[in-house]
Image 1 (cartoon, rainbow, N blue to C red):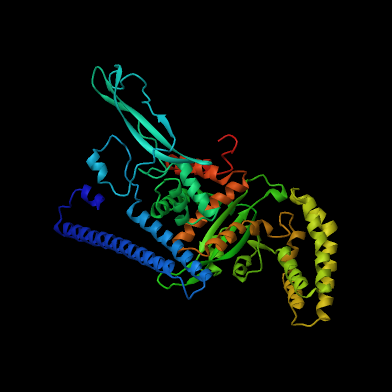
Image 2 (cartoon, rainbow, N blue to C red):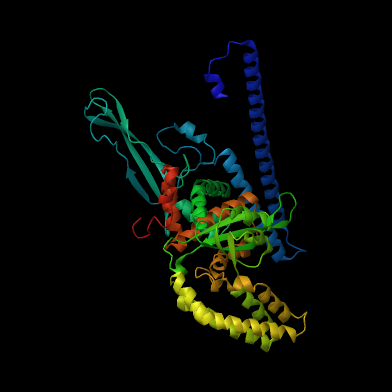
Length: 530
């Protein structure tokens, strides 16, 4: 609409009428979009109130129900409420969206502000003074400056083990000659016009996604320290932080899928279906790159993606441009990727061994034990050649692993012919034989790995989180979690404490050019020098 308004109206009446019709259409579309956003916000607000009522009702129940089951239902509703509040905050703006400059408003104005309480006086204060870049001389005429006042903005910050208030002091100066005013600008904050420092945001994120503390529990913990940080406020911070960090997560994803080999694994993540009171099974996928086992020097990375189900279309879409070795399990959703040879399948020997291990535990089968013992030397050889270049790894495998695999294949076929065909042991053997071509990719390419343990290890934090808070509160909550887990996992793989990296990233990313986002990647910022 702005473009039309700035251009000169046509002189031709027909063209003028056409322009008016176009503008009317644009206005109708704009109004419809605004109304839809308002209705969406209203719906989420009503859902939040309904969740609060449900939680209060369940908490007051005392008899007739299993306390464990009751606690589980409350946990589910609490997490869903966290996600709804995050959606509301991202749509309508967080409660702290106003500036906290103390000299900007009268006491009467400050009294009318919603949801903002002074930071506790008991917290330690640290002043950071921002002086004009021009120094003591007026930028307009070169005259001497005199101080006429100052603006103070208080930011709540967190350093390991303690909270503090950082007072950003910006003295205002007036030129003695021309009366021109000079003042340093307020430094950029991770959340525009908000009061959380990057260290506090990093602490909230790590507490939620590493320590598995839901936001309502964090709010209770902070309240014991005298800090009024409601869950809705925290939810808004999480949403804004994820939004701010999303370009970095996307950059990491591009890097993870640009290598010659990628590990892929997925894990179920129950997701609460809004309005239905029950969960559906969503998935979290991990795409991991680590070239170090075959002597590669490119940095490692892991990229997480949340999807509402386990349909093969999701990894097929994510890997549509990938060329190389796909290290994964035997999931049928990957099969389309292997057509044409663009993607080479490399199966996991740990998966194959696990079936025999389960049979050994269940029935103490001597044949299952023998299968495991035949596989074990393969893992020992892999440990010896870890970190060597592909050519050396392949040569060692052809000389030492290939004969062991050939003997194992012969033994599996012979054993399958003489055992009951519907037994679990038979199923384990058939799985291994069916995957034999993919299992022996390691004999054709030195970059391939014997197993998919690297990706499985990166799924453990999600499994712990799933155990603690049971599910994802919403699709958007799952997407936020994937972004933060991408940053945390990749930071850890590159030697970072995740809280330290998130603090540094959130401190810098708002002002960093998007076309140079790679400069803030964990492997380009060193923990010991940042």
